[in-house]
Image 1 (tube, rainbow, N blue to C red):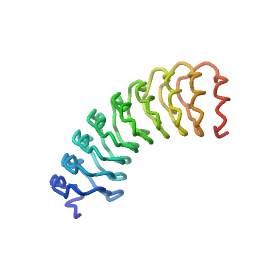
Image 2 (tube, rainbow, N blue to C red):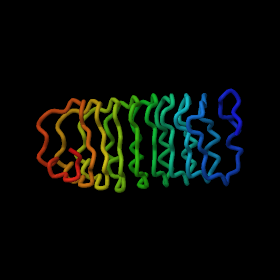
Image 3 (tube, rainbow, N blue to C red):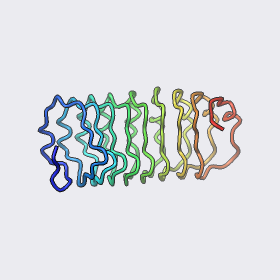
Length: 213
């Protein structure tokens, strides 16, 4: 595909609907993500990472019901995550790291049970961590550092039975580390540093036998 002035054309939605992957990583693409991507109904991979994209995440991406991997990381995207993305019921990997996204995380992401890897680090998210996101039974990686998440780390963190990498560092979490974290027996990497936490480290952390030391 030829790019005029480094921009993705608005007509991109006219590509064949049989297209299953669209990958343009590190291609110096500028401008906005065309809403026409939502017309590519059979896409399973959309990778626009490591570019200079600006503007918002188009709500039309929620029409991509077969999308399994969405990589928008390392761009200059702003605004909120549209709730429409929760319609991507096959989404397994969702990378938004290193952007300028803000606002709350849509609670409906907890309904996307297919999610395995979620990287939202290095943005400006400024809400509490939605407890609904901790209902993802097969989540393996959750990276949220640094942002402006506040409030307490939910007790429901213990529901992440499969997670092996959990990074909530460099936020504004308060209160104590919930003892329920001992239920995360698959944890290999845990980072809660650079928050506003108080109290002692619960003995339950010592029961996580897989943690790197």
